[in-house]
Length: 223
Image (cartoon, rainbow, N blue to C red; front, side):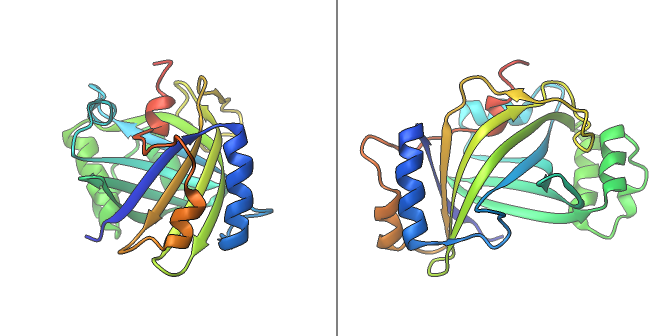
C-alpha cells in the first residue's frame, strides 16, 4: 500500500485570493474541473459509537474511514473510497459503484455485497456486518484543484463546506445541506516522494501551520 504525504492549512478569504493567483501561475488546473472547480458530495460511514469520529478527534496514529463520493451532481460516476492514515501519511483506495448499488447501501440492502467483484465493496460489507458501520452524514463542498507533475503534487482549495445533518440519502436532490458552522477554507497539499520548492514556496503563508482539520468532523458539529 502506497502512502502519500499530506498537508492541510486553514485559510481565510484573503488567503484564498492570494493562493489562487499563485497556484494558477505555477500549476495546471485539474482537467476534470469545470471553470477551475467542482462540487464534491460525500457520504461518510461510522459505527454506532462514532469510532471514526473519535479516532480523528483523539489523533489516533493509524485510522481509516469509508465514504461514497460523486462530483457536480453526476451520479453516473460514483466511487466507494477508503481513506487510511498512518503517521501523517495518507492512502486512498477506490472502487466504482453504480447509482443502484450506492442507493442499496444507503437503504441497508446489503445481500449483494459479499459476492461483488470489487474487493473494497466486500471489505465495506464486512465492516458493516461486524462493526455495524453505517452511513452517517453527507459532506458537501466546493473544490478548486491544481496538479503539478514533478512529485505527483495535487493542491486543492476547499470551501463552502456544508453538512446534510442526519440526511444520508446523498443521491436525492431533495436532501438539504446547511453550512457546517463557521468552517474555514482548507488548503490541502499532497505529494509522493518529494515536494518541489516551487510548490512549497507557492503554498507558504505567514502564520499558517499544518492542521488536522477534518471535514467529516466539522460536519458532525450538530450531532
